[in-house]
Length: 200
Image 1 (cartoon, helix red, strand yellow):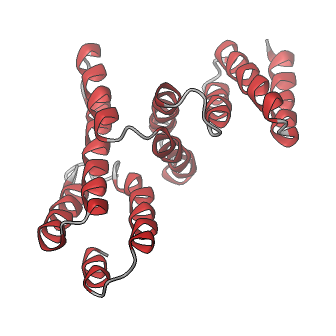
Image 2 (image 1 turned 60 degrees about the vertical axis):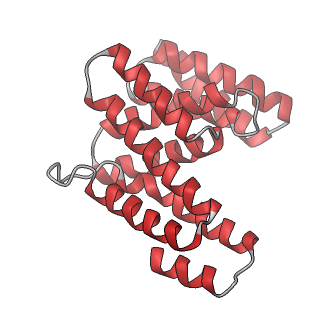
């Protein structure tokens, strides 16, 4: 992939096309963050980062630097799950936000973890998704994707059987979806709230 990027740049591909390619690569990076083989740990992302650095030294492209920052953000995000100290967890989350200050990327990252969770059969992916959505809300509390972050957090809490928090998040999502006139999303919130009401 990195070789392809270098080749495209040397062919003088328009910047707008390079932006699309770079964004697509960045969207795929969370897939490599948590792997079953613990011995490999961060090998895949560090290798991608090394190859990106080589490509940058050849072409000095802004998009390559952004992708390197995205890798560093993901590695910091991962470190926040690997240590017990709450203070250090917050520090690594802060690093993750510094390297990637775009809430949309954390929203998309959360969506990817939600998709990976059933395939990986690992409940920790729900925690990865939860933290991703929380960071997205923190970085972008009033964006178009914010309502979906609240909704997905509600879904996660519901799966974790924490119905009080789930109810709160579905209510927050419902309020925002109402202001956006998102009828289908409102109905999904109502359905979940009704299910929770029967449980609580």
